[in-house]
Length: 448
Ligand SMILES: Nc1nc2c(ncn2[C@@H]2O[C@H](COP(=O)(O)OP(=O)(O)O)[C@@H](O)[C@H]2O)c(=O)[nH]1
Ligand SMILES: [Mg+2]
Image (tube, rainbow, N blue to C red; front, side, top):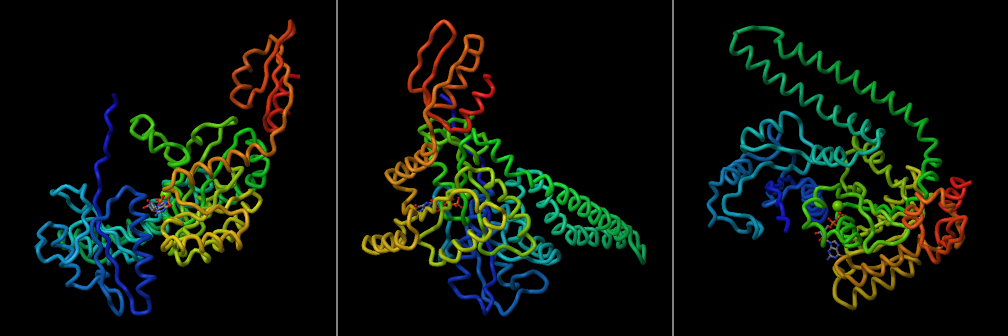
């Protein structure tokens, strides 16, 4: 039997300043989202530090007292008895240590550096967390270029900060005055970054022309039935993906666990096989500079034959989120892709009466929507059925003749179509199949 490989957990703490104009609800929602984003990056968030302030501390984002508190927590010197609430999950062993402090705002390079020095662990701000997620999700060339531009834009001032630090230390050591070596290096780096951004922008313009033929590309892929999950972070996309593809069962298999987690086939398998892919989630609090890279990373939704738009029905702000998702999908040209709206987490909406009322209202407002809980196997099975039906509704029945000389295509026929009947004579074999008209047509062409 294969041993289950457990990834080493990476522990993180989250810290945020609540400004006076931010309501408790907004503040909590943003923190929740950051914790979800952290999970996506493989962090286990063990503690959240919050502080109400009139503004961010200029030197290190948080006030001195809070920094001290975090520092002693990171160094594990915390007086455990002094803790009112400590959110360490039960599978967190005693000797845990915090690898990273995640900050729920974009902070300046010098704030980040000062905070790091004081708390004694790495600091990642909200923008960096999101950039890292986009970086991991960018598959197409255009998306990779777009994310790299955003990363360079984010890195540039931070490199200057690092260079300034190195420069001032250098000067201190050598007693050298005026322009330090660090600074001229910075100039050079700044120019390099500018050049690289310009180069990437040109590439993207060139790719835009290429993308005009995207529709053709989708036509090309019609033989492959594919479904993409889209929607906000925390709506339940990944949970649904696992439930629909049976990967909860299969994940114990080490080989399987190492495969790309974002594309899998629907399970139990159907004919033709249907691929399910998870896309990068929408973010409530998306820094303005990251909008372009988000959109390009979402681009792969265009390749799907069907979109499953997952909405958290238990989130009070779901209607606004639904609108934003629609708008963005329209903008990237995904309005042409058929879509099923899935209101998930219905089990999380109040008591049974409230759930029934919510469900009834949703069906009135959004006819044809699915209201479900990813945690209920019966609901998942129904959705599975609905997806399969979508791909079968346009199927036609047809006979394909395969001469004996082309028997190597036999396997392909069985993989691509549902074979209803097979017979043969001295010329070859005849298959009565049910399949996509396009795929049948293509195979016929190939055979003639
Ligand atoms: N109560 C409830 N929780 C759910 C449901 N679906 C997902 N969740 C939880 O919601 C959180 C976010 O789910 P996840 O699949 O990671 O969302 P994603 O960001 O869209 O991929 C996780 O803690 C899930 O366990 C559901 O139907 N009901
Ligand atoms: Mg997810």
